[in-house]
Length: 201
Image (cartoon, rainbow, N blue to C red; front, side):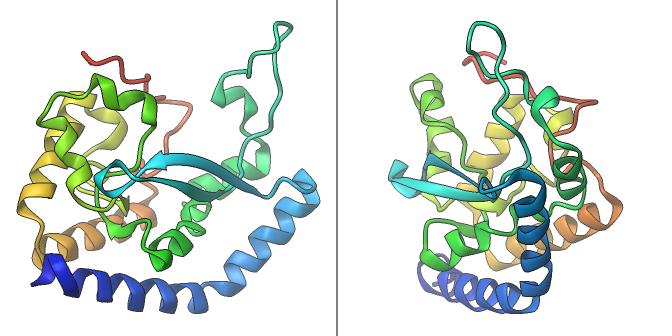
C-alpha cells in the first residue's frame, strides 16, 4: 500500500510544504545566480525516470559552459563557478527538484536519476533501479556516494527497489538531513570526483 499509494501522497505533501517553507532560500538563490550568471539560472537535462520514461530534471545551474580550443566542454571542476561551489556545498542546487517530485517525475527518496547513455551498460539487476521513481536522495547517497564504486551504488539501488518501505524512506531522509548539516558528500566534490560509469567500475 505504501509503495503504490502512500509514498506518492507523502511526496506531494512534503515537496509542496518544502517549496513553500524554502521559498525565501529558492528566491535568494535565483537572484544571486541571475546576478552572477545572467539568464542561465536553471539546469535542465533529460534523464530516465520510472520505467525509463524520460523527464527533464531541474537544478540550479552551478557551472558555466566554458569550452576548450576544440569546442569541448571543460571538466566540471573547472566550470563550477565560485557562487556555484557555495550553492553546491549547501546542497541548495538540488532544491528545484522538489518541482520534479511535485509533478511526479521523481520521489523524495529513490535511486538518483543518471544518464540515458548508461542504460545499455546496465546488467538486468542494475536495471531494476528503474522499477521505482528516481529520488532527490537515496540509499547510495547516504552510504558513501563518491567513496563507493558504481557497482556498489547499483547494488544499493536494486536493494532499495526491492525493499522499498516507509521505514527505509524515513531512515534515508534522516541520514540525508544529517549529511547535509555536516556537509558530508551529498554533492560531488573536486576532491573526490566520480568517474563516468563504463559498465565495469
